Image (tube, rainbow, N blue to C red; front, side, top):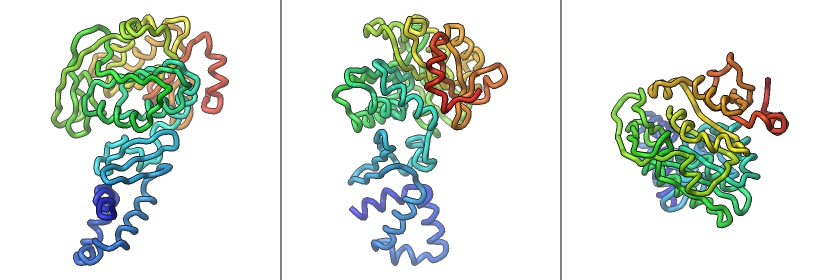
Length: 323
């Protein structure tokens, strides 16, 4: 068990740095102490000072991180595993806190671009009994991570459905471009300017409206869209559900660097949503700010609520909101 633990923690960048410094100073020192518990305890002590999470479980084959709300498999040797959360101590904290609160009373939640499950797993953990969680992740490698993480947080009283299709403006097929350097988390329907080589995979596509019709979903309480630039395609295929009597709260990522490859702009995306009867807010560090023409591209994550219910939602957001 000790040897297995050492092999895992030695993959962590901070530990690799310590390894290099130690061997530079005294090449024999690692030989003398590498198999002794004192070095293992030192590595674990450094790990505890370097990473940030509620708890870490190391088994014979896995590392499992507990955020306090949900658990996730973590690959210490992969700098992009969990999008760096263990080393930063948080990941989109304000977005997470607000949407977890909304999900705690939601009957239907949809996650478009589930990735490894950061939001989906935490929403699943707090959703009411009898509710439904629908997640879309078309990239096979990332969907596998997502499913493993969801299984780690299984709720028998919540129906969770993982879909292998892309959401777009029309049914059909799309090509996904996966940057080999950054991995599946950065896959997009357009080749982004990340540099390096791309792997291209083909996936089926449908619209959110068609999906809701086939699943007999008449409303969505919370909708997240993180699709690396394809926001307008998803939104155009969701006009009906977005204009339902009970409009969803929308969390959407949109930034110029990815959306411009689709021939669109961030203001175009945000104004499209506003035209359907929504009021928008932009995330600014650990705060929310009401969306205006002056701050429309000062962040990359946005929250939209029903214009008619903005007053009641506003009181809910009060602690996180500045105007």
